[in-house]
Image (cartoon, rainbow, N blue to C red; front, side, top):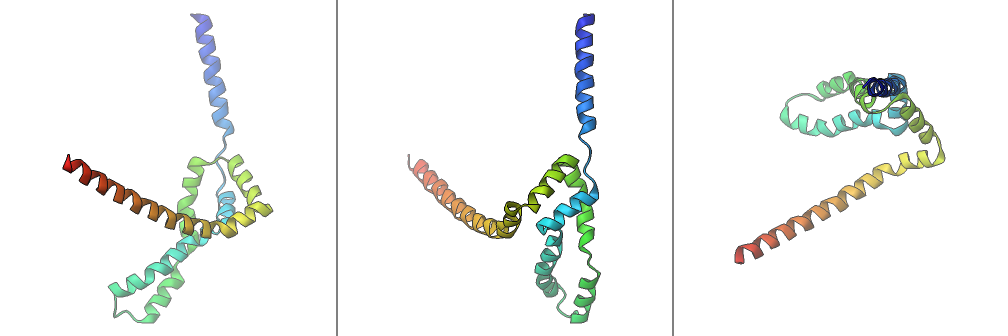
Length: 146
């Protein structure tokens, strides 16, 4: 029994030491990643896309209202909100390796082509989803006839 307890104690110590070495990534390293990938600007881009809908909700607001509002928007606020999410899933080592990758030619190319990849992937996914919906409807109609 003592031998078993020693083995368990050793295992627990090893696990805890592994957890301690998985250091939380710094906010600065995560913000460097967001900047490298352009993700830091995403919030402002989303807001710019939302403004026309907001203008429809408040049609009598003068253009100066929107200009003033947009001048107060700080993308770093969104970055501050997402840093803890990155810290939850990625260690210092992970962020360092990812940042190093984005400094390579392949990483820079990935950043450059990622928007096109996402756009085309979403279009293909939408078509795929429509085809699946048609198959479901056809199968359901066939099942009803049985």
